[in-house]
Image 1 (cartoon, helix red, strand yellow):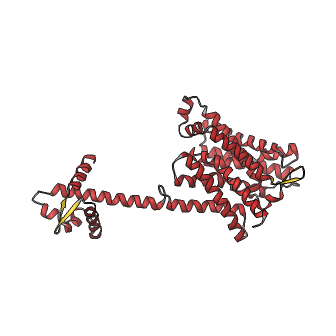
Image 2 (tube, helix red, strand yellow):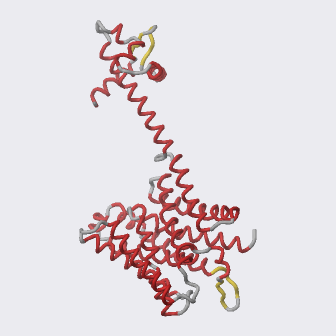
Length: 370
């Protein structure tokens, strides 16, 4: 593996982790589409920052992008609070307008520089190693690695420092305000970090991958666990895995690196959506299947208890009669009886069913709770 390949993967991993950290809060606050709005709306701020400095590497571009990102959040909140436009419509209106403004500014005033709409949308990680950070003649590596790492570390420190406050503001902003923690201030600071992250990741991976990395890994992590801290940790790990595997898939297919990374995020979701231990399709199917058998066994023990020691007991407690009285198919009825016997809820007396003490207790509890 060449040095360039290693640098590309390192930058991809750092960008993925930096995006996943604040993206977790967007997902938990049900504001996932705000990442789409911010990652597009920062474009005019970047362009204006370039016009003021004439340097694509200037820190002012980060400031300008973060400012327009915050402006996006403020405008969306303001429009939503008018109660005339829904939040999703407000997001679509604001980010499309600001993004289009950035595209117009590029097309009209920046046509002769390396700042184009293709790079804005898709980025190109393969070119990251060519933009080096050099200090006093010493080559320190790709510049994107340092800018993204710095923003990512600042974001991480903010999350660690205000972990309890952010957790409280995320799940109960009213209680957070009552306790005097200023959830509104925390919200806008968090949005500022999201904007800065989107700016520094912008040139390397483009806005499409920024969206995928801010939304996808946190959603995938949430499929694994509901624990707040673990969701943050798992989202970072999953984003790094998607970044590295996406690079090698792109290498093998000779395809877009950013595109393959986004695809790997989607593949992660598909796999976890199927096999997640709590919320996956397989777990849901097993849970429903278990509940189905449990309900059927409760119906069976109630049926036996209601008819035992009655003149109809000989007929009602016969195995073959279950198909008529409970409208069960023969195979299903045999399965319910087999499970009830194995759990010692019933015992067989020839072809007749008798309740055990455990079965009688279950039947009484089911009747009381019904």
